[in-house]
Amino acid sequence: MKNLKEFKLNCFEHPNAFLIEDYRAGDLVCSECGLVLGDRIIDVTSEWRTFSESTDKPDMNRVGEAMDPNKETNLGTYIERVKKDNKLNLKKFENFDEKTKRLGNIQIKEIAEKLNADKSIINAARNIFENFNKLFKGRKKGLLIATCVYKACKQEAVPRTLKEISNITRFSVKEIGRCLKFIEKNSNSKQINVNLESTTTTTSPLDLVARFCSHLNLERYIVRLTEDIVKKSSCIDNLSGKRPSSIVSAAIYLATEITHCQIDIEDISRVCGSAVNTIKHIYNLMILNSNSIMPDNLNVCRALNLDMV
Image (cartoon, rainbow, N blue to C red; front, side, top):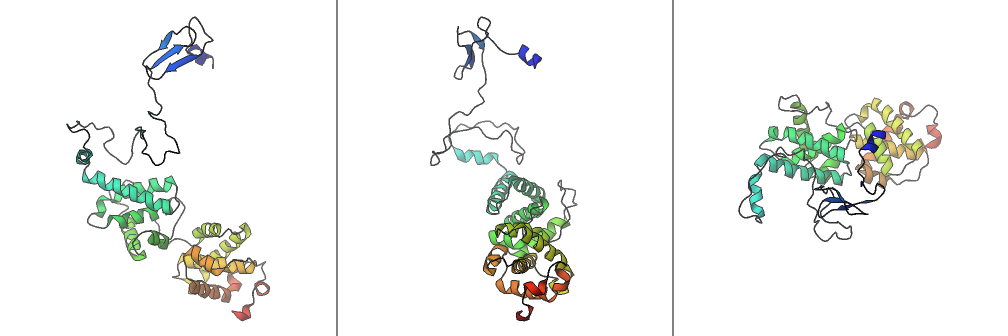
């Protein structure tokens, strides 16, 4: 702190006087005698004041980000043309690869906003898209973008189901699954500069429990019971090949029935994205194997009327 005080700028005649900064002239002036203590000071604030009420008008602030990591020409210099106000000339400075990246980043942000994903998922999806864009020539770029968002959610430990991605985009689950296999197959290519974890085309049911239960506003003990049911349901042979979201929805329905939680099965179907008949079918399979999937300290026969199943 002593070294910092030595470099403090003060007026020689009035050390205790306040210093006034003239933003227009770029000078630092003493408030007592008017002595200019500093000149040509750069103003780093906004050029125009931006008010939150002025949402219907364009933002007059021309100050953008310091650097865009998605562009390769941040330090490039272009010679200005004669027609300064012709915005169509700006498109000539953007090549095809940069245009594809820019449009892809916009679509990734739109999909992520529909999923309520944070910025880390957006950045991860953009990184995956930038690496696999050249390998995906001649195919649907929108399909690659949707798959990159799915892969980024999986990589950031916030997985989404293929059906959720399919409902937001115009691509089917099979198309996204084939594109995901393409990404995993070419993840070790020399042109790829991103490290991707080897994942299967489906999401683990246990990864979906917390998010689905949060959307249903379930208590913590119901969440723990659902996780326990999902873990032990892997030993049921009849559940092999079922969708993870269907298994989780049936486990939630079973946990709410055990704990006598008043929740409608249609709400579970809406949140989890599974049909009501599918939930009831898997629910019945879990009841038939209740001795192997239920906790030992839980009296299933007392909580459920198994004769009516």
